[in-house]
Amino acid sequence: MLVGNSLEAVERRLVLRTLRRFKGDFRRTALALGVSNEEFCRKLSAILVPAPSDPFAI
Image (cartoon, rainbow, N blue to C red; front, side, top):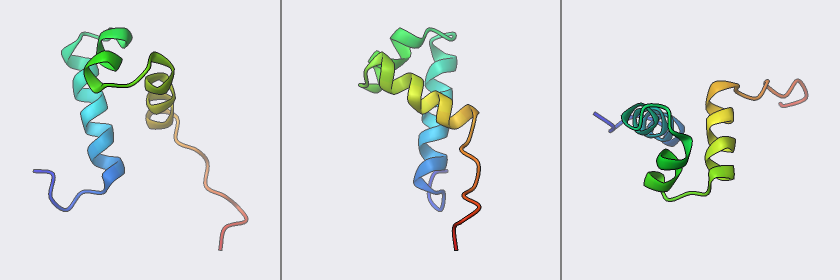
């Protein structure tokens, strides 16, 4: 169930499930998600290697 999850969590789940559906094929996954290969790689990188928290954030 997707209700109650953050947008980031829903996007992460969609990206990873689609990637699994296409057996790791980046190009087919990007096409299915309607994004460029470059955008897909950026999204996947953000999912797999989350940005460190900002030490200067309040």
